[in-house]
Image (cartoon, rainbow, N blue to C red; front, top):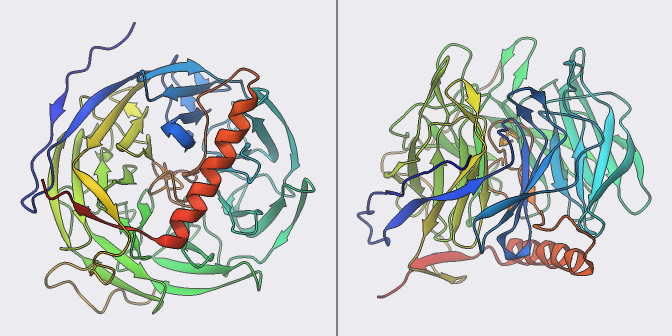
Length: 450
């Protein structure tokens, strides 16, 4: 039965930003969380696998933004949750590893063709892994980094979609899983936080695809897992919340790849973990939902403004949810599924933001730090995406490598078509081209004059 979800108005920003709304975005065929989601041209969203109320899922769901409705997509060959989802240069989606229905990590990889509406075998990982990340690089290859097998992993792998072959990538300097992975504007990948046998990590590492090596990216101000990482228009990365293993965090900080340093920014109003984050059309970042403690979720949301370095209330979703995904659309951010109460919800909600026009040349030097932010960043350490989704996204779904919900990675891609349709492949290729073009221009945004 379709849920009846009321529209909840968010607060008006004191910076003159137009009023934005939380609106119902329909229901998938079944509840899911700890899944992946990707976005295609036309703002269609493809949600894959995850954990449902009866166990790991093989189902997928396709969001049509024109009707705000969902339809079923092609089913996975193997049910899996906590996998890593990304988009290939061909426009196909790649689902890597994850946890099987019986709880064991998977070494299988599947690729989805939006033209045929079917999944196919995409090879086998050398080592089975879950809670890993998959990032599509500028050269078209896919970097799979770390994760959890029977033991945590430092190993990484590269998938070449042109040949279908897997090869070894340079390893992390230390094992990590449940980290975030964010594709930077210069083509490198930032892995931050996550878990290890020695506890939660504050350390971060940078992957250089030319050298095929990871190097240190310093340390965050606190160890984090279940956090989000979002690429900002300035090229910096905003990391929010998460858990230290002792407490949940409200703190946030940014990473500057130009200086390889971290800087603390203003804290959120609410400490949260396994939440989601997505980039809004205005260039601000929406953070929503998450867990406030064991079994306690929140429906609250707030927005970070990189220009002022401040947070503003963004109202409440109709449902409290954690371990969801967030996908950045042209009109706002779509939050899909997640754990709500004691069950996984099929519902999606859209935070719509209007009254903005892009301006690639405006405020290029805007600061990501709030008044009084600690310029010293983080101290030494002892990488969602989930995504956190969550990332997985993961940050936001147009930026490969962002956490979505604290598991896996939110990346560009997805399609609202499940049947054989020649236009689907064209849509996917257009989406990837647009994604790369946006990375090159790194647009800034400003409010409309009206």
